[in-house]
Length: 61
Image (cartoon, rainbow, N blue to C red; front, top):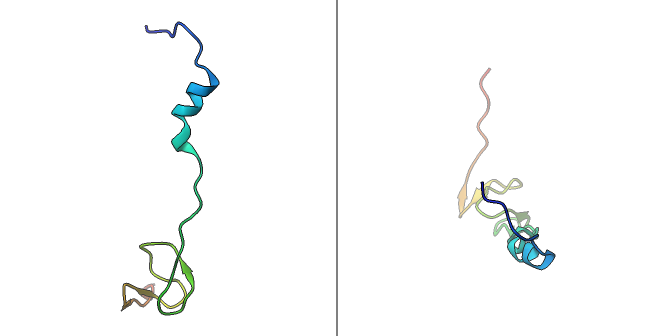
């Protein structure tokens, strides 16, 4: 089994993990109601996405 000969330094470990940092959420604003919306999602306020109106379907019992 392969075993490292030397301990991994903090600098090398940090370089490897540099892409694992947390990034802020990207928000867009709905062109219809100007509410903040996550990208590629239907606006929860007015129900539009890419200039199309989507209505919530009623659940059947």
